[in-house]
Every structure is written in C-alpha cells, then in structure tokens.
Length: 150
Image (tube, rainbow, N blue to C red):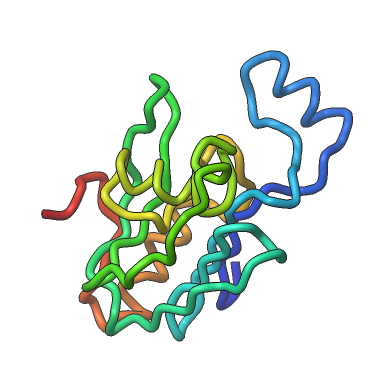
C-alpha cells in the first residue's frame, strides 16, 4: 500500500468462484460497493464504477471501524462521517436487490452507516497497513477500531 488503499471486489476468476462455493469470497459483480482510503479522505462507491462516488475528506469523518457482520466469522469495514448526508428516495424495486441504494440501507441498519463493505467480498491491502496509515492521514484523530462509534 502506497498512499492509497482500495477495497473492492475483483474480477471473477475460476478460483474466486471455487472459494465462493466453499464459503470464501464470492465472485465479482459490477454493482458491488468499494471504498478507497487516501491521504485526502475516503471515496465510497455504492455501486463500483456505476453510480457517482461519495467523497469524504478526513475532517468530515469521525471513525473507521471493522465490525462483525450478520454472519458469524465475517466482518465489515465501515466509515462513520460526522453527519450522514441525506439519501435520495429509494425506489421500492431497489430495496431488496442487495445492491446499490438498497444495500446501503441494509448496511445502515446493520452497522449504523451506509459507507461499508463486507470484507469477505472485497480485496485490498491488509487492515494492519490501513491501521498504520489512518493516524498519519488524520493527525492522530482517526484510528482503525473494532468498536461501533456512539
């Protein structure tokens, strides 16, 4: 990891398909969320490369956490802004798709923020490296935690 950390679901390969059937990460879909950490802040793609990305500078972020997911043994990487911006109205057909804004609403219900990715779905640098960079990028204000911020 240089000065950026992109957590995203990579293109599907035979190996990722096999892992999916044996309980590991699932193959790529173009509408999965992705999150990019960099010295200027966070870029969150609710639908990677398809919907506009949300840019959050470090002064607008209060916490970054790794939390247990809804399935035992799986975790989510979550970003908590100071104030959640209003979300546009979600069409009823989007609510249950498991992608895009419907997934964002599910993340908000599970983790308290829509800016999340399931770690078993994404690839990226190690969380140890991300934890090392966060204090440097935020002058020590934000650290990677395993507790949901209040």
